[in-house]
Length: 206
Image (cartoon, rainbow, N blue to C red; front, side, top):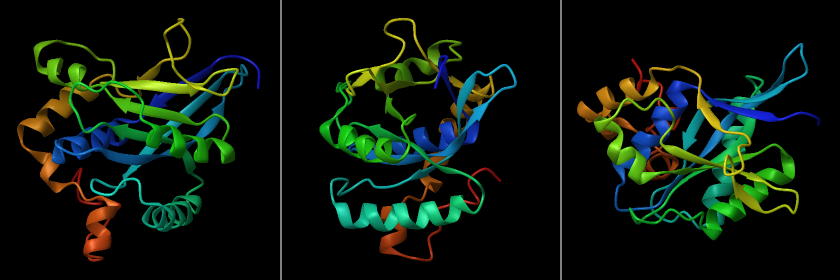
């Protein structure tokens, strides 16, 4: 695929990821990213991340629950012409800014099926400083595969960056944080404990 690939995340997907991490501040959390690859009439390519599904906050390394989750997610979103296009991870420790082996492994799994896959890591320090500034960029770091098939921080050489589709997303996010909206997030862990809890979070933005 020629040309640079752009990465764009929708506001609701972005906010859902951050709220999930805030709900479980003392744990590592993860999620999958849903969307599609879009090619413009000029031939440029954009990976549009339209939604996200929060996965786990307890045993994030266990494979069987992950497989169950991925099957259900692929079935639901496949009917909407969307697929799994990436992976989100938030580290357990606030000062840990490294991409963990768990994140890399799950990212590798998604990459096998979708070669343009993105891995996104929450940037805790950027999130903490968000109320102090007017920054419109996401509080996340984007990782993509380099030529030698290793996960590399994007943008370190001026290459692809992650942008938020709606410019005011961080303002909306701060409102949700102020109203403790993170308490309403349901992930797959919650759903497996109580199947009446909907992992699609249909009420979150109402």
